[in-house]
Length: 109
Image 1 (cartoon, rainbow, N blue to C red):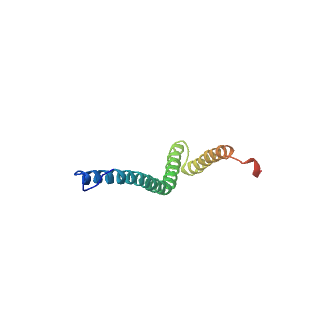
Image 2: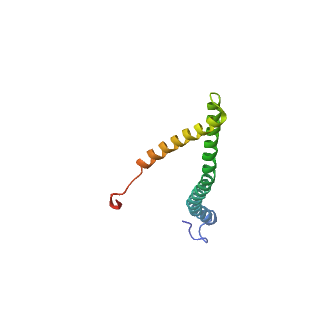
Image 3: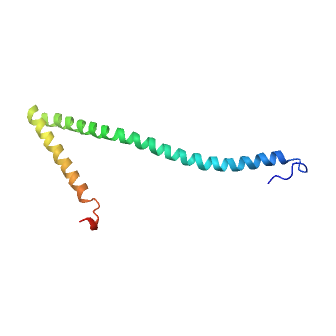
């Protein structure tokens, strides 16, 4: 700690170093937490907006690719309903698996 300014010739630099030390600790603690919270909020919002769009586009791309693949062996109308049935079956199976793995509280049954 800085001493008496009348007897210590280095009191100004000691005081400045002490203030800098404590302000640095406070700034580091506050800004690191604030940056972490802001990053979490921003990335969460980006994911919240982008994920549904990306999932929808992936399902559309898979459906159209499947239609083109099936259309090589059949006509277009048959390829469309076959691709819809295949995608529906896959989504139902995935949904059933996810529903069977969900957490169920025993008190609420």
